[in-house]
Image 1 (tube, helix red, strand yellow):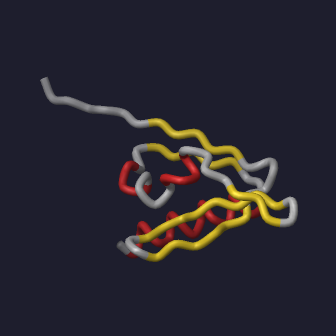
Image 2: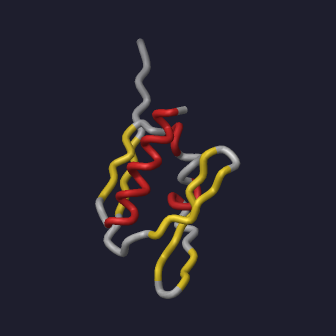
Amino acid sequence: MPQVCRNINQIKICMETGNTVLLLNLENLYESLYDALNQYYVYFGGVRYVDLGLGTHRVKCPVHQDFRYYFASFLFTNH
């Protein structure tokens, strides 16, 4: 769980500052990023926000207009 918290915090900082994020094989974060991945934004005072969650804890995070994310997932199988 500590690594999940660190990853979510790093993504939160990128959202606030407008940096781009590549989520590579990080399916364990998708639940926490559900609203962001589905673009469920709310606007207050002209600022875009999204909910981030860890378990039952939710926090509204401001989303910079330049923020982008990409995600990729690879399935490896043994033959």
